[in-house]
Amino acid sequence: MSSEFTGTPMPPATAVKAKKPYLLKPTLYGHDYINLASVQKCLEDRRSDFVTVDSTSFSGELELESRSNERFFVLEQDHFTLFSHYHAPVKFGYKSRNAIMAHLWRDAWILDLTSTKFVEVDGLWQLEQLPVLSFAFGQDADTLQSSYLIDDNTIHEYYESTTTMDMAELATVAQGKADLCVSHFFVVNRGKEYWAVDTKDPSISHAFSPSTKTRTISRLADGPITVQALIDEESLQASINASTSQSPKFMLRDINGEDVVEGDQFVLQILSDLDEDEDNEHHENGGDGRSMLSDKDWVGAFDRSHIGPGKEFMAYGSVGHADCFGMAVVDDITYLTFEGQFVQIEDNGSSTVVLPETPSKRNRIHLACSDDGFTALSRWGAKVPIVFEWIKSGCGFFSVDEEGDYSIDDYAKLRLIKV
Image 1 (cartoon, rainbow, N blue to C red):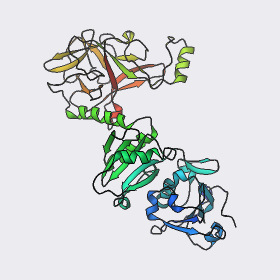
Image 2: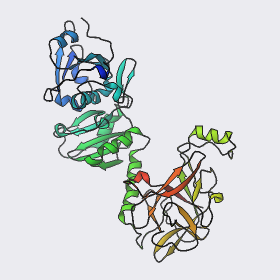
Image 3: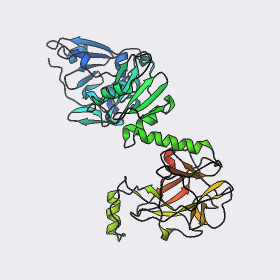
Image 4: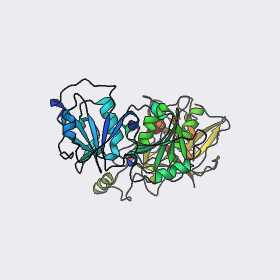
């Protein structure tokens, strides 16, 4: 009897509850025409049993009849199949094998694909997102723990060196698997240390801890953020965390890393968040005829018509147009200025304004610069970010976010360009 089966999972409402045998290892049956050594490695394999079977006589259905309260997988040439007493056989794509096995044996004794991020493509269930290639030190692999689906969506390779890790050598392996996994980065683990490494340039790597693993990998896997972008963000975060008030040695820098001094004029740019549909609608409703924006366009963040003494500090995504700003140093504190007046936080604490008076400590803005030339703004004396919110018409505004836990993503990141 053929072990090729069709069918879809039984709806969750009709599934039968069963006691999960936590200590039972998953079994994977591989037909004798499959080279098990060539099957892409997964972390879950270290907790599984592989059995080679005679393809002329083995039947998944008959094997299932001989088992009670148990499930198993059958490895085929281009897919693998789950057999269970609680639903019809289900076919899966190999690229998501680790995620599927971890999901079933850790979280879901009764299969419920409707409550997960699995999709059916050409008759095979799999995750939409490609897995992440992860290298693990052989002696550490059995202790690795995962808690979320993004942690499980991996393929694994193991290295046994007890001294050094050759990132260039690992990158070569990763480049050879570009069609199997996320191609722009890979992860290396050694004990409690993790690194995200740029596949094309392995000299670019970002270290992270187990506590930030899920968030770091998720951001990189979702894209379009790169390893270098994470490094740049960390630099900016370090500048923010170093002090909630500026050192007398603080120097404002432009996007090229050059110092900005009093008398310099510069424009400030922010990354547009206006998508193509919104821009078309803006044109149709009497917009200003500006060119199309994409989420990769850096635009002049400030427009004169939206700025005035004592008025809310607004911004407008105007391509090719930006007002000039300056800076002033008063009592060793660097301030952002506009037309000789000080940019500061409004008394109500919710927005930014331009006023002639030197800001009080309560109204003062803290400037932070990263090594890569980006500038972030926050409330003086506290790590409270000044954020930027785009609205549908292409206008936006700065505000002070006084609530919640903050990450570097919350800060409005500006490019300072001398003119």
